[in-house]
Structure formats: structure tokens, C-alpha cells
Length: 115
Length: 116
Image (cartoon, rainbow over all chains, first blue to last red; front, side, top):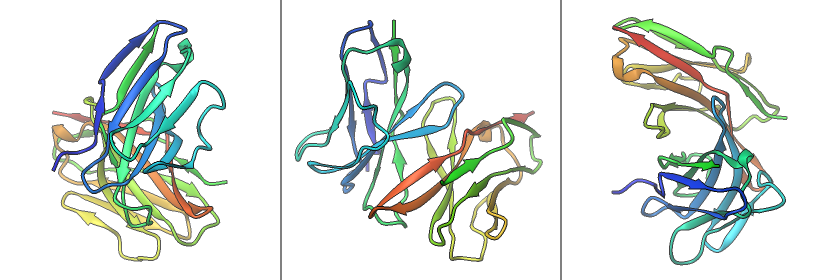
């Protein structure tokens, strides 16, 4: 049973370009979370999605960031017009349900570098 | 507001010895879960152990155990018989319910070094 798959592992973008980060949850998981980790810091919640629905996007910056989890295919975190401050590791996690007993399973993250 | 505090940025332990990583949290909730995650240099976040707030018995997973003190809002992780492969960042996390969904709050992490 494959774990949470994120790609690419590393992504380099110039300022002003777009970054697309992909996440395929574990088989049987329909809840996806995106977190951002700055160097030497913990994970900060960005957005929580279920299939075709954004449940909670309270951690998402108001501009340039968007996320989706379509009926078919992976979840996508999209960052438009990237700036140097967007450089971070972005982690996707999935869970079987939104219930309190359901732990998060994380992918290996995508390290975004903006030059 | 819910917060998670890990006051030890870095800890060292001799191989085969025992080490305890501390975590405190602040909440007004009564029903929640607590977790410890391990992040090795590979960057993957690995679930180590979890504790339900309603359970008084401390969780144990092989060499990993917790000391859960609900009244003190403390959730420390004890690693026994430390191994070189235990070297990693360890994050304490708190999961709570808000507006019908569940959120995680992570601490800033403790870097554990294991000395041969």
C-alpha cells in the first residue's frame, strides 16, 4: 500500500513564475491537508480538502495561493507569481476520515526554492 | 488559542541510553489527541505515537512511550535504548475539533542527536 506521494521532490522557480505541487493521498484516504515548513520551524497548516471541496483554508495566504482536490487525480497546491518568501518545504498529508481518531500520514514533501 | 510548546531546541543522548523530550500545550478543549512525529533527514514525517486525551493510560510503542499529564497539559516522549536511527527532529502535535473539522497544531520541534 503506497504512502502519500508528493512530486516533485524539489522545485526551483524564478520570481514571478508559477509553482504547482502535487499530492496523491494514500489509497482509501479522502482527506488531504497541506502544510508549509520554513527552515528550523514546525509545520504550519495551510488548507484542508476533501474530494472536490475545500473544507478549511484559514491558513492559506489570501493572494497567489490556491488548492484543489478534484474527483479524479491528485491534489494540487498552486502558487502564482512566486516570491523568495515562498521558499519552504510543502508537505501534504492524508487521513482516512476527518474523525479525531484518524492520524495524518505525510508525504516526503516538496522543497520549493525561489531564485 | 491552542498552542504547542517544545522548549528544547536540541537534545543529545548516548546510544543505548534513555532520553525524554518535553512538550506542553495550551487548550480549553477536553477532547483531543496528541501525537509525536519524527522527521529524519529524509524529511518524511513519521508518526511515532499518539495519545487520546480521555485515556489515562500512557501510550507505548516499543521503545517509545509518553508521559501524559492532562492537568499539567504536558505530553513528553521517552525514548528508551536509543539507537543511531532515532536521530531526527521530533515534533509534538495537538489535534482538536473546530467548526466541525479537525486541525493540527505543531510545536517547533526538538532536534535529537544520538551519540555513538
